[in-house]
Amino acid sequence: MINRNLLVLASIVFIDMAGIGLIVPVMPSLIQSLTGQGIDHAATWGGWLLFTYALMQFLFAPVIGGLSDRFGRRPVLLATLALLGIDYALMAMAPSLAWLFAGRLISGVMGASYAAANSCIADSIPAERRGAAFGMLGGAGAAGFVLGPAIGGLIGQYGDRLPFVAAAVLCALGAVFGWLRFEETLDPARRRRFDPFRSNPLGTIVRMARIPLVIGCLGAIFLMQLASQAQLSVWAYYGTARFGWTPAVTGATIALFGTLMVLTQGVLSGRMIAWAGPVRTATISLAFAVPSFLTLAFAPSTGVVILGMVIGCVPGLCFPAMQQLMSPRVGEDAQGELQGAIASTISMTAIIGPPLMTGVFAAYADREGLYFPGAPFVLAAGLMVGAVTVLAITLARHARDEAAA
Image 1 (cartoon, helix red, strand yellow):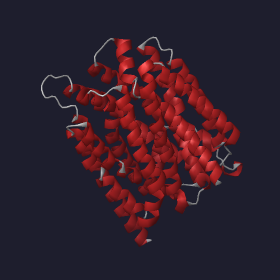
Image 2 (cartoon, rainbow, N blue to C red; image 1 turned 135 degrees about the vertical axis):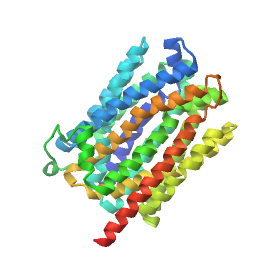
Image 3 (spheres, rainbow, N blue to C red; image 1 turned 60 degrees about the vertical axis):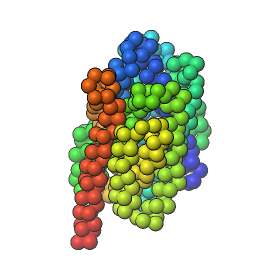
Image 4 (cartoon, rainbow, N blue to C red; image 1 turned 30 degrees about the vertical axis):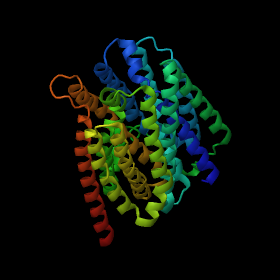
């Protein structure tokens, strides 16, 4: 993949994630306006909306990955991005909560393009440099969360529907830009037949389980992403309940964290992996997640929340390092399948996580009994301890196997 093509791909991912980020700050108020219920019930509905989105991603990420292995990355990426824009336009007109749920079903299917996007890296970047490229793509996605929530929080003050319109326009622009500038990365000679028995979550993960390093990393990814659902699911509700954040403040905090992730993944990950190696980068950086979540849980002010966010950006180095470790151990004709397995694992946590985290939040945010809106972050810290343990054991075993070979 030439540098220009990588930049175009990063731009497509940026626009895709900016569209998702645009609607985050207005979801609490939109749900409240559609249901007439308070913030605690709105958080519960928000969790089920995320559950719906994630369920579709879980089911369709292997399908999208398999289709990209068969037909190429370009048509799959552009089609899903264009259809996602149409879906946002329909959600902008949602007259009821049921309409919003239907929109999230479609968004989840189209949002499964993660597998195709990351497969482009594996197609044409040498194995020893893939960590930096994966980090660049992750940084582009994080950058989308800088622009998206910031704009969504600002324009959301003039109407809960406007961010959905903006997201639709962004996706349409991304599809047109990609159609004009993005070049196919998967050579026709390296494509494989689409197999429905492999292109499903269970079949994909079972196939990846044959590779010890890959299944161990997937286990760590499951725990770390389940912990991250504490931020993704309750952030706006937590800030509103604990500190009285407005949509603009919520958008600004998400934008700040996105900026930190851009610097971590897009700028520092490649350098850190080259300097310390992917194994040490992954294990050391992930350990920072535990104090980060505990800081968020007990933060007495927005300033301390920001401190927790700064600490929490360090684990962003872990994911590109693990991708660099996993990618060379899978055949060149199955990179989409690997990325589909990663996407399904992440989506699985997004199925379990939102009801879990919003349920914990609602239980401690209704002012009956102990009032502790930061409770989901304590649970997240415990999950991260598990993730660090699983990753350390996996990489230690891998090092022994490599030495024995």
